[in-house]
Image (cartoon, rainbow, N blue to C red; front, side):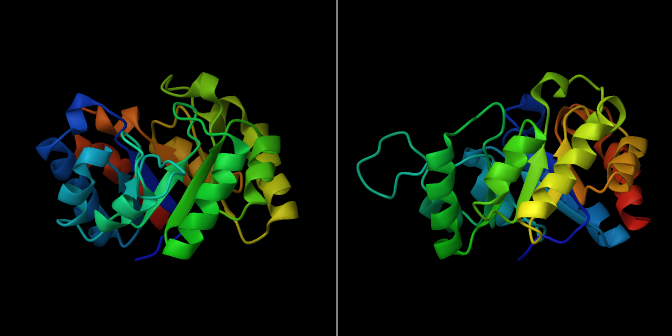
Length: 227
């Protein structure tokens, strides 16, 4: 299973609203809307919920992070092999809440390539996005950390970050898809991101903590369908 673009990636983080059986409920809601609208939606539950979700939905499932250590004596680490065995098709890497060094990012991306796992790498600023794009992830998501969880979408508050990021990434790695996130909370935010050149968005609290998952996901998915 591969990612398609434009895409909506829903990051469950460690919100209690999307933990355990609720993670599966949210993933199934996303799956239903993805099929109904024929749009691309992926979900990123917590590691402990990966298998539960991956075995019960037909949309892409991503891990929220991974460690560079291979299988072996590495207590507490999350191996890429375990992520693949659980049914995930790839990983989110270098989120601002789970940063990795550039050498670790390189190693993880190289190992993902060998394991046929997709990498969506995050970056705080356009320069970092370009630097990590050179390493060869499938996609780079630009997320200014100061806007994450604020409801102030990067596509509204700092549109130049999106356009500069797209331009810089495409200049050094034209095959890498560029997404954006941070503060995205509405269909209008999604539409604006796509107009600025992004090929999708990462969303977390705006969906996970919404009173009505169905309504909020539909609002954003409609913009993917009309892009």
